[in-house]
Length: 233
Image (cartoon, rainbow, N blue to C red; front, side, top):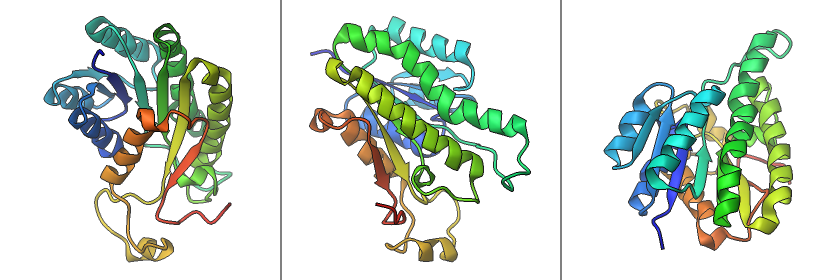
């Protein structure tokens, strides 16, 4: 059986980069992209491919997919990450910021799904995992753009999952809570029932499971990784 190939977008740092490392350690071939250039460097460091490309640029995404297929002849999985989503007071956020968030959170997933789904269909299987946020199920006024558009991503994921489930193509979202990046806040930790931040490695471990054959019957789901932060049923 050929070695499986995963494409990880917006993965120059943080959770996306940790997913790329976890996949490479598990024996996957990886193709890593980011707009900063760090994804390109990471992909090469992991013995795979690296691309400098924004996930908001349709032509750049097409080059990443085409380059991965040219090098490896297949794509078995995609992990979509994103960052830098605009925020502000609910009605003070300008249209431009809403449009930027739409590009980053939702259209980036739709665009790459268009690009890779024909390959999945030809191969007879494929899986996409989107790194979303707990705000998808509990909208938060601190993150209005993210909250609204993560909910929209959940809706798209349900529809994609239903459309392609019979062809062994799956899509799920992971919903991290507060994940430690730089500094800790005691106030934030007090909000979380576990009284601690999550780690990027914990997010990556769940993503790796969802990409595996052990999760073959899981599709169209929002998987919360938030230490019990979300209270909704």
